[in-house]
Image (cartoon, rainbow, N blue to C red):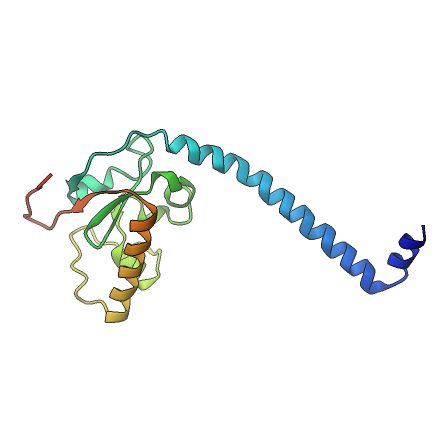
Length: 162
């Protein structure tokens, strides 16, 4: 009883108790919201491993998470990555869904998710600044560490090797 009286006797203590309750609630709510996401991510891992192959831009567009049985591919600097296990980010409705089934190099280099950063034809990125190219290379390294490399993006007229 004395403890309770000590707590409620000071506005600072009341504020701190309220703050602790608020953050505890947010933490519990956050964990319960993540549980279904983990389940979805686990089910995405049930997709069969994809064989390495080469992709044209048109072929890459098929892997947007909608038209390809849920598989999501993204191109970065001529490499194609399977990001299906990150459906919450790259799948339909995700914050980076605009990257799905596309060459995301320019958008990653310019830090933009605007549709104007995507071209319908092969993008040689020759107009980007060195700092933007460095940024794309850093993204490429992150993708190499996190996601399976499933092929390469073909330039116009280039023949598949795989």
